[in-house]
Length: 381
Image (cartoon, rainbow, N blue to C red):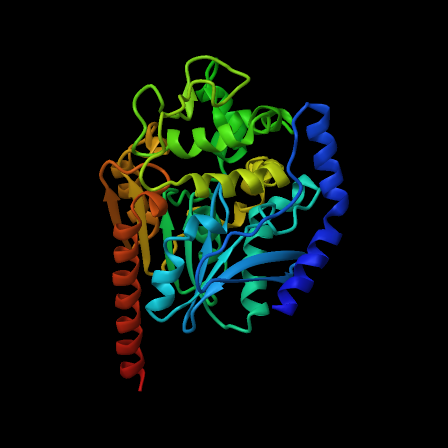
């Protein structure tokens, strides 16, 4: 498509300085960084870039019908939804999977403060406007779920239905007393004193980049395999370690072979993209944790009232500190219209690991919402 080619040319031109900065970063560390983007091909999926909310956003899309916006997490890309896009499109939906702010072919603002939840929600609103749509169903995973939770909270008029995976809704709590003044990172420092907690490790600019970008292919293999339900005890990634470390993946083993849901082609695409862009964009989401806490003070104890489906894996290491059943029970207080499903023996990358089960749950839930809207429309008539 001519427009897509023009978009890519403009994208490459606009990001040249940022690429030069990234290449310099890697050269200083002796890491040969790939600079060429080789697009991956999926039958029926088209790609384009749109200008909105002050940046250029890349999207993969397929199908026509009601709009579904798919939002990935860390460290992922639009490609994380490769097993959902064609299925949802065939079912009669316009499926749009984004490279989120700071990832892949989407712009990566240099300013760390440009990655707050308000910016990220603004991106979704901007995509909706650019597509000329009045509403969309949000589907998110990991950090993408956090963005979807907040978008549903802030703009229920635009996002009437919600699906989240692997990251529960945690509302900002009291503004009074110690809880009202203790920043999240301060709370983590108290709780994990003397231990390693990956989100604390991610806070300091440039530190995690050195470890993660030393060998991107190995980093992606360790992340994707180590946090999956297929990881053995010796290969498993853990969010908290008993001792501090300069390498957040040092304890994660490398499997002899990839799990059945992940191919060498998949791994190569992830590795290619993060070798090209680095990890700073995604890490900057973590580095705005305290700022998000400040900005969301107006939403203390806020409920999300939209119909919601929450999916998670029973072996997701993110839930090692607090089990999924406990989180789900707490979420029912804040998301009264929630449906939940835990997939046993599944890890963190739920939509990739258990694509058939996730797709079936998505289609059933979306069909229920279509029927419910039809019934409500008839009642109003």
